[in-house]
Length: 102
Image (cartoon, rainbow, N blue to C red; front, side, top):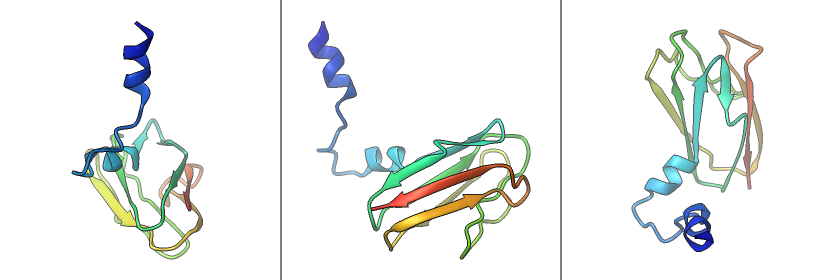
């Protein structure tokens, strides 16, 4: 019934292993887009991008950039400071995303 559905959408905040947090802070690169395009995280959390396209992609911020990511490769970055961080793919500049750190 409805109770079961409600439980399924509740975030598992009691997980101490960090697996839920990692999954939540994941950006997939697929179809030449960053998904989600805007991700809000807490200060000190790590975001992981995974390339699911056959084309190479990068995560390019004003202060740093990832290497070229091939299909299946990931890049992680820990955001120590609050702020709004816009990024794009230096191979495909029309691909843009944003990380909001609270």
